Amino acid sequence: MEFTEKYKWAKQKKIAVFLIIFMASLLIFEGFCITKKAQAKPAPVKMIPEDFSSIAKKVSPSVVNIRAEKSAKVTERLPHYFNRNPGLNDPFHDFFEKFFGDQSPRKKFRRQQSVGSGFIISETGFIVTNNHVVEGADNITVIMADQKEFKAKIIGRDKNTDIALLKINSGKKLNNITFGNSEDLKVGQWVVAIGSPFGLEYTVTAGIISAKGRVIGSGPYDDFLQTDASINPGNSGGPLLNMYGQVIGINTAIIPSAQGIGFAIPSNLANGIIKQLMDHGEVTRGWLGVGIQSLSKEIAQYYGIQDGNGALITEVFPNNPADHAGIKPKDIILSINGRKVKNSRDLTKIIADSDVGKTVKIKILRKGKEKNFSVKLTKRDEVLVSSDYSPKGGEDKLGLSVSDITPEIANRFGIKEPEEGIIVIRVTPNSKAEKAGLLPGDLIKEINQSDIKAIGDYIKIVKKVKKGNPIYMYVSRKSKGFLIIKIVK
Image 1: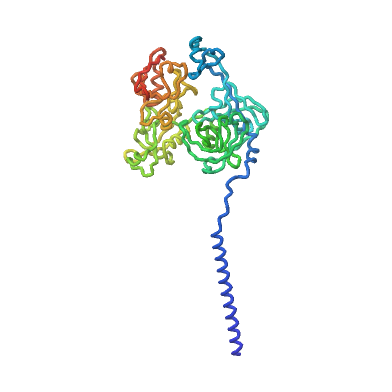
Image 2: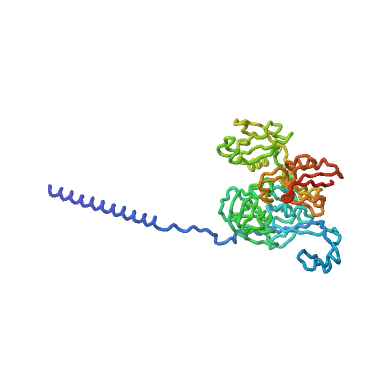
């Protein structure tokens, strides 16, 4: 009996030892596998889609080619002999000038044509494109993917965001594109552009989102998507698509001297504009009635604003909403209806997106203390606040297009020091302004001995001058210093 018990105990001991050795072997083997996996290179990430053909096939029937025609009055000189129109470096220039002289100018009308793109957003024939594609057009022709042509009418335009809404009557339901959420986009994601660059219809290009929130100096609502998908003249108004074939941008602008840099209006910005154009034929925006600027690092430190967020009020326009509410210059707007204001561009967008007649709650910082105001917004007067004043899309009656001196404008014209006044952007050939000697880049400091600090000053003073009376402009010009230029209205 004693021998049997000892035998059983020895046998159990051997089994236990065997199990311990077996489990230890398993642990060692598993650890070896984990180590090998850790040492192995990670699986490569698939970076490039196999192709974009499914997106092109799905969306192309909804993309259209747009041709806009308008009559333009042009001034030209009578043709020289052989219609050569010699230039300064032409060896025959002196010969023709001697025997034919400088011929008198004559005016005529010439048909001008612009080519752009667009896309169908409803079965009933609403089409989105850029304002600059159709602005001033007498005739607009929409060419479909099947080459059928339809005359289009303009439902509404918004110059500030460069969006236009057209309508065609095709007699049938049309294929339309849906919008995606541009806020969901990430830098580096793939996008596809479809349009008619240089009139080459239904060209498909692909690239990535290079940046978001770009400000390029085109207007007060700059908030562009930047992409390296190839965009060229003629792509304007066409869609920028995500990998689901949804519109996340409207192709709008390029930098002519650069390659691989194009800009598109984000779909989330475009949606509200398009809805207003469809419902009312125009865009109305809220108006606070202040001049503003973002907080520099120094200003933020001076006012003790740790995060640097906010918008400094530089001017309060008399008899406007902010003035009525008691807001003053040097106040810093911190939030609107509880939404934090990051910078001046953010403030402009929040107010512009607010309904006219709506009362908003504004929190400001004044001399270190926070205060709250209720402000009833009015309708924004785009002429008085536009950074580029060009009535009806062109120059005013003097032949001038002028602008406030924004950082973008200053960079464009090489203005290094802070300057007061407004700047001449364009001068119409043979206009009163050109004949008086004004040039692009001139800074207008005073008119009839009244200071000019902003576009509104220019408009008000010029408007008061009666027809036939002189307008004296105190002008600063890089190469000449200060000049007095007289224009008879």
